[in-house]
Image (cartoon, rainbow, N blue to C red; front, side, top):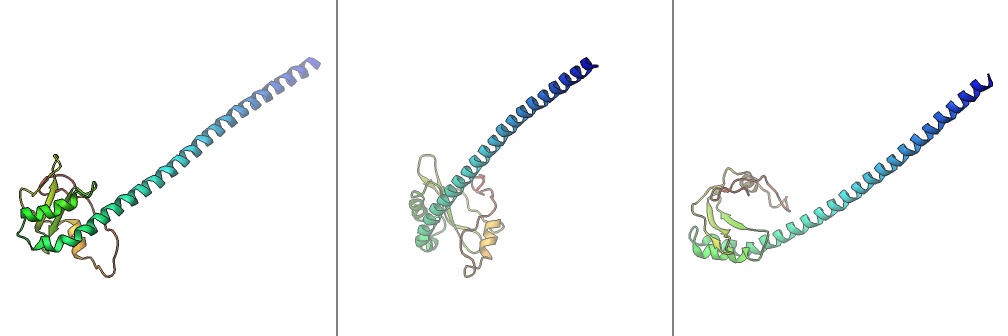
Length: 168
C-alpha cells in the first residue's frame, strides 16, 4: 500500500510540475503579447499625433495660400472669361504652393470664370472647355454658407473634374 501512495504522490507532483511549467509558459506568452500590444498602441498613438500635426500644417499652408489668392480673385473675376491674363494671375499664386495644383473662380451660377491647372512641365494651362459646378456638393455648400456664423475650413466630398476627368 505504501508503493501505491508513492506512485500517487509522484503522479500528483509530476502533474503539479507540469501545471506550473505550463503556467510559466502561458505567463511568459501573456507578458510578451501584452508588451507587443502596448508597443503597437504606443506606435499608433505616435502615428496619430504625427498625422494630426502634418494634416494641421498642410491645411494651414493651403489656407495661407488661399488667403493670398483672395487678394487678386476680384480682379481676376473682372477679366474676360478664361483669359490668359486671368490664368497668369492664378498660376502666379499656384507656384507658391506644392499642395494646390489648380484653382478656379466661379460665378454665382457655377460657371467657371477663371481657371488654371498645373502641367507636368511646371507650367499652367487654361482648361480646354468651360464647365459648370452648380450641382457639385462643394458649390451647393458654399452657396448656402453663412459667412457671418461660420468660420474655418469646410472639406467636401471629392468630385470628378469636368475638364480633366480626375478626382478632386
